[in-house]
Image 1 (cartoon, rainbow, N blue to C red):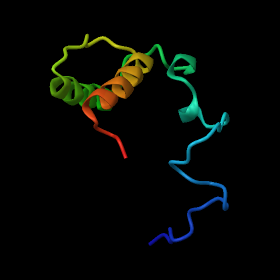
Image 2: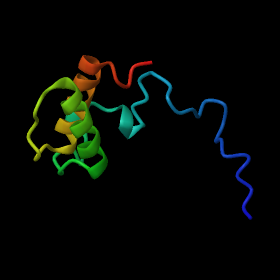
Image 3: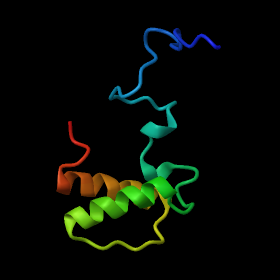
Length: 84
């Protein structure tokens, strides 16, 4: 059995922190993603379907990863989902 009790890389290595971590691809604007023009992922599609239904909207099913991310952000604001 593998010991996974110490999985940190240091005191500054955290997930969920807000800030300008330019080295972290997830912190980039979706329009700057290298794979942003690829089709949205299955997870994005599923979550967008849920958000769109809750918001009473219909979205095209052929969104890119970047477009899907932007729509998720917008619909989370509209529906209140994903808010702390």
